[in-house]
Image (tube, rainbow, N blue to C red; front, side):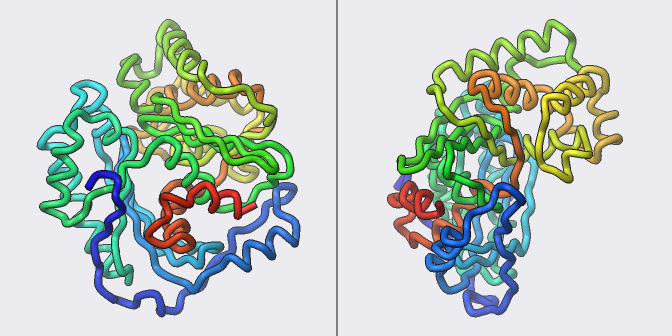
Length: 357
């Protein structure tokens, strides 16, 4: 049944009783929680368990296997397989039989990998491609019949809340804060404020989707930059006004953008002058040159002009003055949600995010 949470048994190669070191979700200077908040997080901890989740996205199908107690999380593997699902859905509005076969092959491989690492089950979530695909029911049926799993197709709100839950570092929530994830097919923004319920907003614009729409040159020409900016600007017009002046970004787009200015890899903070330098490099260098200079795949480098444009539009819409990048995201969020909320985690996401504060 679509939307129900199902996972495939993986066997018992170590299981929840296996002894692994749990890395703390460290504070960063100036952004950490106070002692009382950290103590409260420790109280929420559960017995350690190995969780495994596959994430079917627009650009990639990811696997994360990690041990967690619901507070700390240590990855055992974090890997991905490239996919063209976002492009297929953008151009044809469907995934099709070839795309479905690719997903099946990836999930079978990930299931075996998770089993060998001691996970009891493999959970699977899907984002924008399956949210939009006209043949979604056919794809889900094929996955259920051939792999034994029916993915949870996350709503924009669920994807946003899982992003917050999966943040690796605690962040000060005593003042308003935005958390965002610029994905391949969509962008999620979550507004956090003291004594208020988290507000998650989703926008159907992502780096791969915008690149497909504009089909820009390598590097983009001036008129193509203008078109990118116009589309990105229009995408965020429905984002409500916020008092937050801090934005924490997670996800592949954000972490890859950092590589364009290597100094930011130390601070994880992006200043206006950093954004300007990123834009200059993407305007003057081809994806091959970006790839060889900044340790990125050529395929990922091609997406960066769209990703940077989306980030710039988001900053203009929100008036954010403090921008940083963190690790973690929806896969970490699913593993933590399952540890804390059990099989009913989807119905308690907002409360789980609130209890992190």
